[in-house]
Image (cartoon, rainbow, N blue to C red; front, side, top):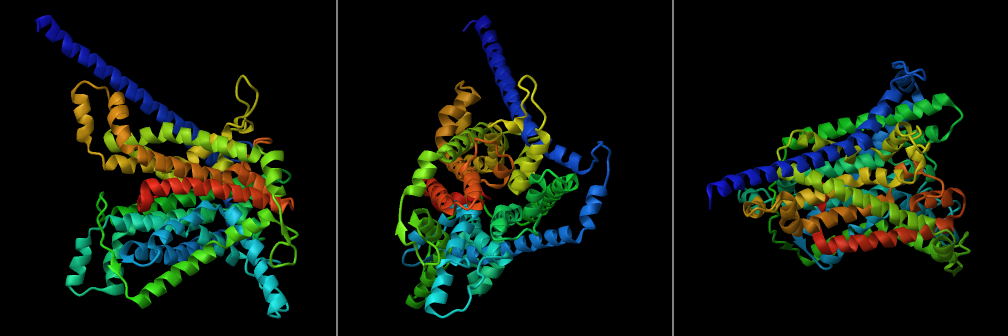
Length: 572
């Protein structure tokens, strides 16, 4: 090679490296721009509104009014107690499920493994409807008790805080199970063997060794359960409970008569977001000193139980799942049934409610599929680069970016929905329509809300792909973009797909933000279900709920085939 060629080669490589670096920085800047516009700005605007008067002057009077109002303080206390109570109940069920499914062999274990995650595909809004149909005052159980066992009046199974606790527990315990299974799968069996060698067995070994090692997964699951319960306002309203923070935020915002109540709705939303941030910081600090697990999954040899213990395990798991599947029965009966009034079961069955929601008013289904699909594209376009930045670079600000995506997990949907209402209410230049008046606001807020699941699914896959594969591609002249497309992506596509499917399922289920940001004519299924139910068309609400369940089940089956018990990494 001539001297000129030798000189030209490094120069060409330098230009290509500079271009690649410039392109990468532009992409990194685009990610930050997206987060700034659709996450940071709305939250800052929410806090600005909460700390200012109508004239824009700084004030603490709004918060003083909140903390001197006994009703709002009671709502705050009730919300925290309900969240803590749900964490306790889901912990008892979820941890037990995870431990039994992962450590022991018994009949039907694979079936129980799959069925244990099915309850999460039912949104609480749909679940509470199903429970009311079966356990309500005029539900199947009470009708049977009064007609055949002589009960004089119905038992109140559902109406009150205890009803919310039942619904949230049986809907959210799979989150705890998945998080614990993922964390427990990374614990080396040698640690258990070491504990047994010094005499630690049974519950003592679980208490002193196994459970502490699952701390990161447990705290992650507990935080998700708490925040989801804390932010849910639709379920409490269905069972007649309004003295909770999320319910008050929604009720105060949707009324446009009393400006003081409207401002109080903003203040409540700001307080909910602040509490979520505090809970997240405390959880991360605790986890950072308790993370003992490795990044790789360990091979765990399951123990064989004696016959009596096998029967006990099967009965326990079966009983919990029977309770968890009660709402599915209620939704199915009301979706297909007709003449179901003061009778244990419908008098006859029909498809007319499905005809109405699928053919006469198909917008709910079509909008849900369209907006959830667009939100997943947003999650992939933004989430995969975020995961790659976190796993493969040392770019400045990447830790802050990771904290922001983690923060999204903790943000209550009610809070971010109200934040969007306040931040994007002014007309956009050129079209004289506010962003919250455009249908595009729905897929954007869904994309932001469900972004962490795609990020975590991708990041978990990147962690187990060695960098040497990418370095080999770059060593023969491939650009980073080509290396990612030809080498990295084929190795991590399952993680990307699993995270995206989770984002899709949860986008379909979203109720808090979509009920607040609903654009007339562009309602999703959760909005349709809520409107049908509140309007008295419970059969149509059930039919939509049944379709939503089928969509979630299809996605969950695909996820189970792809990831199996390692799905918990998406939540961890």
